[in-house]
Length: 129
Image (cartoon, rainbow, N blue to C red):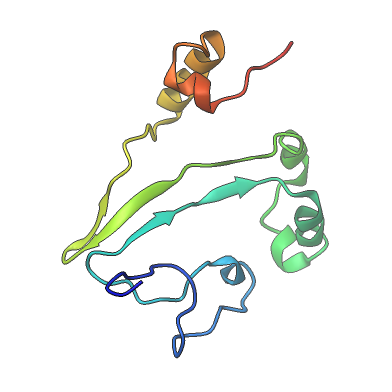
């Protein structure tokens, strides 16, 4: 596709993928340029095999409250994504989603209470009691 820029990935001649733990999950090593658009997708996941590896590694385990962690093990995870564009001054966030915990929880409640009407209802699963 002539004239179009690809944002993510690993371009020919560019830096290779990271190998350091955690950085090895990055989806690009590309240098971002003005006009490029990319998603920023920080996530928190409770993936048992990875957590078990961390708990068995004294270097990581010292930062984990294993007792408190057990409370969240069946939660799964959460990811709040942003779409951003690169500008000459930095980035501009294009997403318009709640970031405050209370706002997010309200959106979730609305979606569960009336999933046929609320936008949140189309995004969030119903909770079956």
